[in-house]
Amino acid sequence: MADIAQLAGVSVTTVSHVLNKTRHVSPDTERAVLAAVANTGYVPDSVTRSMRSAGSRIVGLAMSSITNRYFGDVVHPIERAAAAAGYSLLLAETHDEVAGELRAMSDLLSRRVDAVVLAPSPDPSGALTHAAQQDVPVVLIDRLCDLDVDQIGSESVESTAELVDHLAGLGHQRIAMVSGLPKLATTEDRVRGFGLGLQRNGLSAPTEYVRTGNSTDEGAERALHELMALPTRPTAVVVGNNSMTIGVMRAARTLGIRVPDDLALVSFDDFEWADLFHPRLTVIAQPTRTMGQQALELVLSRIADPTVASRRVVLRPTFVHRESCGCPPAVATPSGGPRDPRAAG
Image (tube, rainbow, N blue to C red; front, side):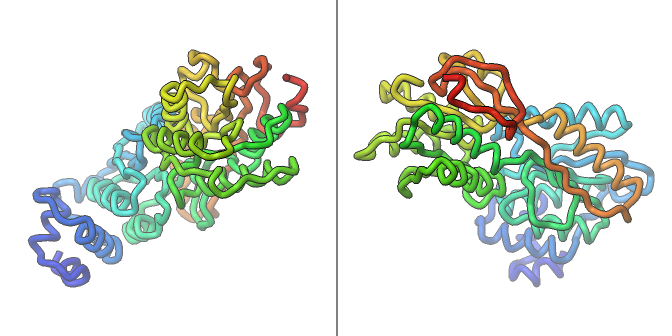
């Protein structure tokens, strides 16, 4: 612990407070301590130190599961698959923050997990280094990164472009986007897909037509208010995830905007009650059950053979056509499949 204190430039007492959560410290101090923990590979002494050698059979899961509705759909199949394989699941909240991710990884490693499934923050390098120093394998889930590590997620670029294709095929030329938390891999991919969809339909969007909702319903609510306050309003909006769709719908109701009569709405991510809204929501649905199950399969195969080459699994989402886009619903089709969106209008 003294090495961590020296590296972070704080006292041993402060390090203890950060690791044991016994007193509030400033965010900058916490980040410095957690970065030092990652750099040194420190794991606290505890009664759990002998768990792995005795066969702990625990998989850690680090993600923003409490604040992100989508991840709830991913956790269940991971837990079921882990239980079927004789493993327990230990959940740690990251809040999609680098410091929170480091803390979550440190907490999981201190409990001697056999492996970690991680929905990475904008910079997961510290957490991955920390795990590697303890020889604990990590599988990234949902957010595909340019890293040599096992990972699984859905294709986001072409799938988002398909939402734009559909809106453009219905005659919309002023299409806006409410994007997710900046710097997340999924956010960047979906913004890129939005631009691709505009380009191949001969459209463009002013800079102010892309507003960040920070992956929260409150942020998305503000974003739609901003979009609708522009001199030239968009006639259609692509929303980057399901949490933000809730905020956009709330803002539309507050502003007296009718969906789809006044504003067409499509979203990335399906959710359990999407077809109960009025109108029912047109979305790109990710294969969350498959993602969770295959993530656990990657974990188990990595535990069984640590020398196997890293794998990158890209799953194909599904276009679910309902009514919020402004046309009658049709049968769901795999995203990226050949179809004329105007045929449904």
